[in-house]
Image: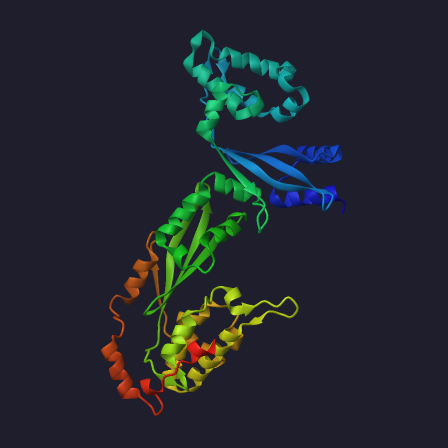
Length: 417
């Protein structure tokens, strides 16, 4: 594949298509400039987008790259259709909409009105504001703003631009450039409206992946619906939230919040299988389990492997599980509240532990889309007060086994690392 074909294929992958754009890229590529800019127009329903594409020559690869673009979104412009000074504005707009004004301007520049069809349109446009007709003047300016290239605009059209248009620049990042659909949804405000609705619920506080990154992935696709997830790891249990987002003509709408609650097994801290649960919890809290770099150790030569401190914790988790019923309850608690945030360690977890966690009772409920995660959490556990210290000591006394208790606690996690 030639370099120019590779560039065109990349543009197509972002949604930039059309024979005119292809011709412009080919022409500019052959001129061998250090950089060049191309303008591209698209329509999304009654809204239009203008893209100013910036290309720079990459000397390392001896090829042009799309380094970024400025996207300009224009809200729908509704023309008042009636007869003014003998001109039917509906017919006039239909004639203007049928013209390729960008091509005409590229070919003739400021002399575009000398084109036979364009000259007839200009005659009617000039007729609209005669006798100082205020409505006619407004309609003329709106038509010129809606259909003519911005290079031909007067001060009146520039003022309309400030009213109707919104600009935003996009540059290539770690995940490449935003495609045309994502740029439209960001510039039109659809992305922000949805993000504000999500932030109202507080889901972004409990999502392992930043909500904004999730939205960029979903909103770059022409899908009818998608789902978002969040999990709150609280003192009493875990709360999973799932919601569907539906794409409509006027934007995106969140559906109800589907909640799944799991209450932790009863926690009685002590020493089980030579593992002190207080020290273990302090150590397990120090790991950012949702961050794979905190769990995996990158090796430039060998395959990435689990970090030593994580391996030690997983070994002790197994000891807890194998120590008996009390240790199993604590192992399930530690897994649910902390360790399950990592997708990299499940193969090192006892299958029996995972099966027991899967069999724990789950409570399900639906809530309105504007309900907050914290409110939902409180609804599930408002009547379940956490065990206080006195109750915990009583339970320890009742269930204490040989070798269990404060007298055998160690500082193994503090000394190990």
